[in-house]
Image 1 (cartoon, helix red, strand yellow):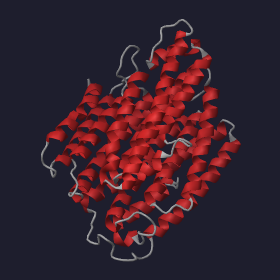
Image 2 (tube, one colour; image 1 turned 180 degrees about the vertical axis):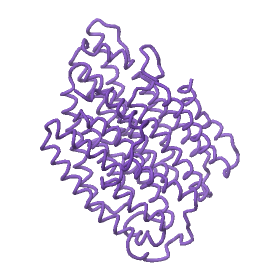
Image 3 (cartoon, helix red, strand yellow; image 1 turned 180 degrees about the horizontal axis):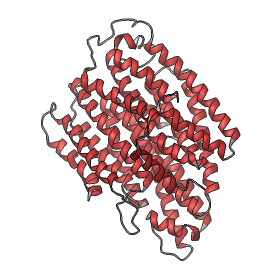
Image 4 (tube, helix red, strand yellow; image 1 turned 135 degrees about the horizontal axis):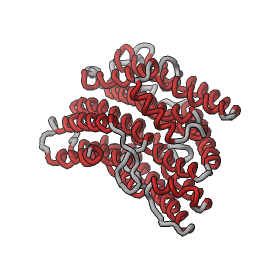
Length: 477
């Protein structure tokens, strides 16, 4: 019942199209988000498990991702209300409707155990978010929108083929083909191994494109860089996390068939490549939002490594989904305020952000420390768990390479961030009267506080969710 309400609840998108007031329409977003959080908490208090013949069910990894998306969307929804109030010169009818449609479609991605329905819902997230990228109506945002549509649509098409190949692997063995994940997990040891591996490769490339894994990541810097701040935060914290969940579910099927080593090799290779690409492009980067976009590529690589390492790294990867999402929320929203205050988001435009915007500038600096794995913030804990799992599995060279890349990225991001937040503003700026206000300031602070709390203390309910996710994925494999 609650799952159906989560999926159908954001039909408020239709209501957003009918509300005539540009001033009051944005408040539909936090209202819907608050209801969504309440429904998610009600679901997590229960014990929803995959159903063999059902369409709607949430597996343990999905419960973790659903919690993140609901909390992050609630945080971003209040920022959105403040952001759209400041951007009153833009009509927000399509923006609000698409944001609410995105919440419904991404909830469907998580709340189904059928590869076919997951694919439809993931494609719906692409269609719902494309207009959000074009909100500023600039040539750069138009280019980013088309690049996002084309590249992600190709990736999603490959994922559809991968889903069909999974079913075909059962047909070749004389079994009834099914796209239901419980059926595939049960049949996995008897499926045709060649077509099963081919299906996984297509799913990994397809959903890896939406996830932002290198070398399929080229849409991500443009889309993150040109989108409004709350959209960038949802992209980096919610959209690509749900794509990672699709990869997790695909890998789980292959592992159940006894081919986990094949999947692990591919995941480790793509994870290292993603971190390397991120390190190369972060060093020398001048655009703050593009820097954060490449940081997302890095952290998707870290998640792929955690999934490939197995063991305790699986729990670390699921925790890192939470830490990365909330950290990116704090960073993108704070950069959004900086962009509005300076009229730009490059190091040539931004200097002395801590003097100009004490809250957002400080959060941006602390958020940089958090996302680069500095204690006592949450990402330090999850990255340590992933590295520990890698070394425990005997991946010493890979682990050493990860540490080196983390150091390079830390130095590269540090140079950019310190240049932006320290010193004195060069000029009053284009919009010298800008102030964050509580709607645009409180969400930034809440995101950072949550990341800090996850580094200091894991609440027992969250720890239970993480352990169940690790056990479901075969933590002792």
